[in-house]
Image 1 (tube, rainbow, N blue to C red):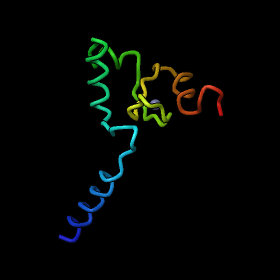
Image 2: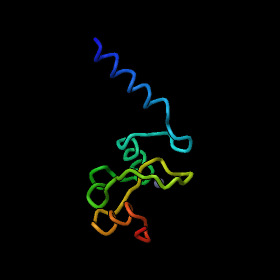
Image 3: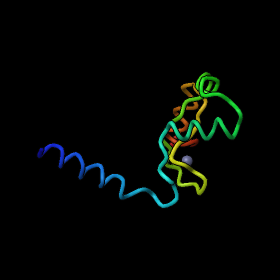
Length: 84
Ligand SMILES: [Zn+2]
């Protein structure tokens, strides 16, 4: 009973603070939206791309980024293009 109450308050806290510019969609929602927009399937998408959390702060950013599925591209996404 005590555990249930604790879990609930943690979930409420998380939901109460979505970033203003990002609607806070899930990874799955991001993939579905992207596929709809670009007329591709999730299977086709995951063949060449990976979805990674994104904190670029861009107005159109949904909190996720689609990155080419190779080590170089993933490192650039995580560190920025300048390696900074
Ligand atoms: Zn972004």
